[in-house]
Amino acid sequence: MLSTVIKSVLRQAHRQPLYVGLNVFGLALGIGVFLTLAQLVRFEYNFNTNFSDADRIVRIDERWSEPGTTPYESADTTFRAIPFLKQDFPQIEEAIPLMGTTVRVEREGHFITFTGKMTDPAFFRIFPLPLLRENAGKSLTEPDSLILSKSAALSLFGTIDAIGKTVTINQSGEKSIHVVTGVLAAISGPGLLDGVEMILPIPPQMKEKRSCFLFWGSSCSNVFLKLKNKKDINALRDGLPNFVERRASGGADDRISLGPHPEKVYALSAIPLRDLHFHDATVQDADDGVNQNVVDSIGLIGLLALLLACANTINLATARAGMRAREVALRKTLGASRSALFSQFMGEALLISLIAGVVGMAVCEVLVPIMASMTGDAIHVDYGFILWALPLIVIGCGLASGVYPALERVVS
Image 1 (cartoon, one colour):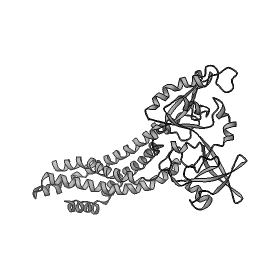
Image 2: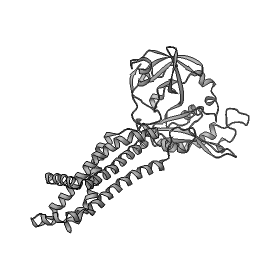
Image 3: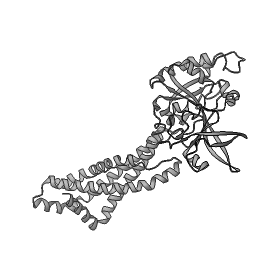
Image 4: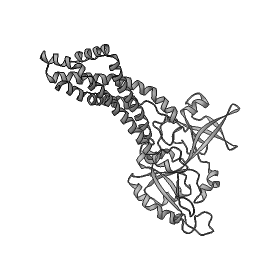
């Protein structure tokens, strides 16, 4: 049967090259577009899912509703809340500030700029990132500690064996010498730590002077919590209004507090790490938020492209059904059963779909880099996804595009 199907498709390609070409190219284009847009949708939905215990990590956001202004939510939160959160909520396992920073490194008389994060030693207990090299137990425990990404280590030292080496950092004109205590492995999947090349502790003097560590309502950057259980987020959310009323209130002349009734203008909210990417589309001071409806619409466009390609294949096969009537009649006269004819025509549709699937994968290879350059996202062809998705697409398209034409030819 297989050899008969292959010979039949080759004979059609020889006699009707335009028909077979349109059939294959149309279906391949639909498959290629679907696979390409599916890569984008998967990329967007995979944000912040690569961390272990991601379902126990939340970000604390501020919500402001001051008189005369439009209420808004900000991803930047006062760091003054951190010690009080740990005291008042037994559900919290760890709490850290996480500040973005630009790090300038003086090297051989010139400066190299890196993207960095400043945080507390508990960072690795919330985000257990893999390390290629580390000074055991001292990753961020010392004020002069420094964690480098693999690319930063290679840029500065030409090797990832950088433990114990010193780096002179210049931040806002202030120089400091740091000792490398760890080298990060590549972080799999997109997320809030994309592109981070250095991680260093927040200097003690900054905690003593920066207003966001001292006053309610003054913010620098993000606050992340790790809960003991993923279900604890409900208790945290329920307790935050009373927490603000209790901890952020003070006298009218109190510079640290937000006044006698802070809950009237100020609130805190807990956002799960996995939800941040879509949630941040409407949040101020957030970097990577996207509208979930837009992403879902893109996925729907890819699915419609695939369905239209199948419909096009059905139309072409149906339009050509009459041209094969003589072949069907002759084979019936020679004793071919309807099931044998149906199997042959379905086999031809599946083979056409298989060829189109291979060509569609090549189309995807071409389109994905173009889409990545247009969106600015680090999207790449995920062969793990393609290896299980493409066979399903080939079989589905083959069945969808072959059943009706096959039945029409056999019954007629």
